[in-house]
Image (cartoon, rainbow, N blue to C red; front, side):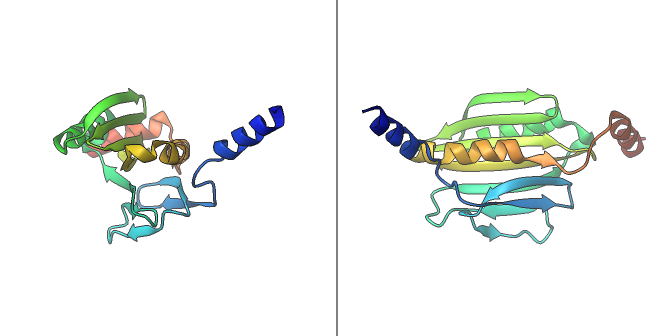
Length: 171
């Protein structure tokens, strides 16, 4: 009986989209993120600020992008992103801004939205935004968690460099 139980746990614990992942490096903004191979790219913007992706069944939408922050203020950028989501009808149920990171999630009708952002060294920010059906929550939660862990700046930041750049940009 115990062997059957362990076999069932292993069978159902195997995450969806456990196949190969690839690393997207955005040199324009200086960030990288791991993306599931099962999400082919649907849009390559001409300005090289990111990508749009979706699985073959188009049940989810994933957008990865970099952006310039007004005066390098990540807190204001976080508020702006949450405001955009609210204006699109998303009911935000979770949000956390901690230093150089932002996460928020919410729902709209039968869909879930998850947004993650990081502040970058040069006064820019990188984000991913994924929305997917509530009925597929278990399928996509593992994808979201890996995206959260893998979104990173590609340059090491030092506080002196950040301050110097901000002074240079504003002064």
